[in-house]
Image (tube, rainbow, N blue to C red; front, side):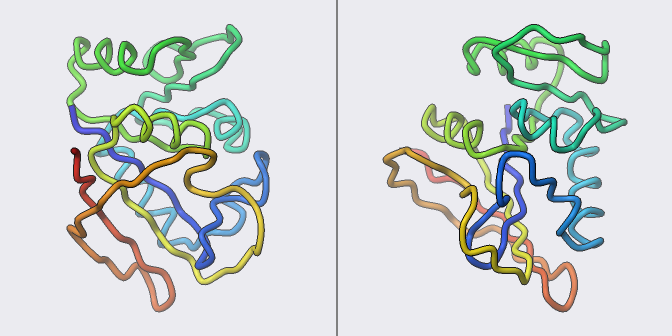
Length: 169
């Protein structure tokens, strides 16, 4: 199963000012359109509870998986809340016929998947903004991961999108 982390960040590497900071508030229209296209193509998105709460509702046309510590109400085919081992969650999705999954953050979820060596690709849009401080792509993990650049896409005059393959050791 292909797992791709997709995120948008500022030029200084910040993905949000805080856990309730919605990227829809500060990203370009082109990045939003790109995210919509990629996430619909993948069909399954996995995110943490804070990221889901920042979005506010499940995104239509794809399965939204929210990793959470508490039981919440699901909407079959659209929204599922999951707990437990992320490897088991990926195996269950694969048994259900999904062959690719998009990891959509935030920092804790990104770090968890990278630490478990479960990310095959990383796709990052870089917006022309500086926040100075805030949440980073990964946090509080000791890693030394190499990447191979697959593609550079200029989304508009100021925003670029990078696609990397994670070199697994």
